[in-house]
Amino acid sequence: MEFVIKNVDKSIVEVSRELGYVIIDTKENGEYNLVRRVGINNYPRFHVYLKQSGNNYDFSLHLDQKQPIYEAKGVHAHSGEYFGPVVDNEADRIKNILLTSI
Image (cartoon, rainbow, N blue to C red; front, top):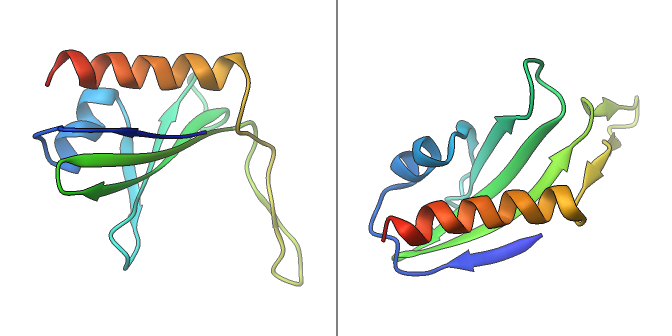
């Protein structure tokens, strides 16, 4: 699920902490890779690719159900949910937190 939140006057580090996410990687294009565990184990977990454009934040959110499987040929496969009530609820939670703190 992709969405944009506009006019956020905070750094990506501040946003990730406020949302309960941990930054696990940063790409050369300025996109951040963040995760938030659902329970006590590493999976399932919410996974966000986050990019800042001025004061706007572009979110790409999904739920990783289990750890990715890497095949010998370098094919990457995981059980990710990109839509549905669980992902919708997490997107709403993120929006509510950031929109009430603007």
